[in-house]
Figure: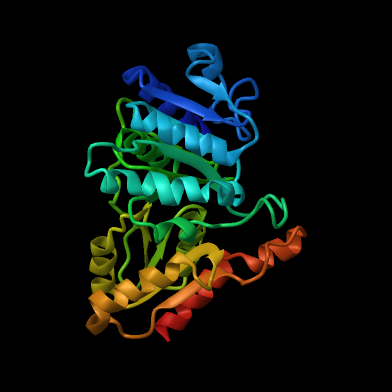
Amino acid sequence: MREIAYWQALNEALQEEMERDPNVFLLGEDIGVYGGAYGVTRGLLEKYGPERVMDTAISESAITGAAIGAAMMGKRPVAEIMYVDFMGQAMDQLCNQAAKIRYMFGGKFKAPMVMRTEGGAGRTLGAHHSQSLEHWFTGIPGLKVVMPSTPADAKGLLKASIRDDNPVVFIEHKMLYKEKGPVPDGDHVVPLGVADVKRQGKDVTVVSYSRTVLVALEAAKILEAEGIDVEVIDVRTLAPLDIKTIVDSVKKTNRAVVAHEACKTGGFGGEIGMQIIENAFDYLDGPVKRVAAIDVPIPKSPVLEQYVIPTKDSIIKAVKEALA
């Protein structure tokens, strides 16, 4: 199977869906001539023209509102918000309008739109451009939230998101764009709401998503040399959450660690941990452990940034505590 970069997989998904459905179009800041902040939309303006690849004003609220209106009229917009940190400007439109439309109109209107954005630390961009804010959206009924960790999942999940009849918040990690991995040819679609077992194991379950999945896999490889067999679950879709795959794993290993890059307090790991307790308490041989960022703004300093966010060492420590 061919190997391509994460950004290329996303670019392929956009091209294929634009070819498949003329109602799909893109809008956002610097997505046309510039090709997107991380290159995901490069070449698409030249191929599809300014009517389907629209550079917008610097207004996240306007981008979101335009996407909602177009979606209600039968289009399938893919709007890009350059950084998830800026999604606060779009929250009223997204959470109070897009998320409620299908319900409040009894299905007569719907909002089939994707809000592409990127988050996470690792590039020392400071507190305004490095946050993990997925938990802002997971508590809003009507929104779907997707965070892929591999090129294959990025392509397959983006295609599924574009075809979905509900608004989808699609969060890409800025440190994954250059990561390469195998991606199937053809119409590769990954269904929303289905987690993936990225590594089989029998001693402890590590549940994660986005870039932290790769960190967990690194930790699992190190632990394997010490005789500890770690199962790694990639949530992929936070809303809807595939709790069954997670619980089935915990019932096998009897121990659970939840790891993500968002701050610990209020982070989505708390929801995953609570659902594990609700559904698999009798199978647990110890408390669910959480690995998350420290509750501070993300520092600009490279050393401090790495200190704040989860690392393979912090996951290894949590796994050993779960086994103690």
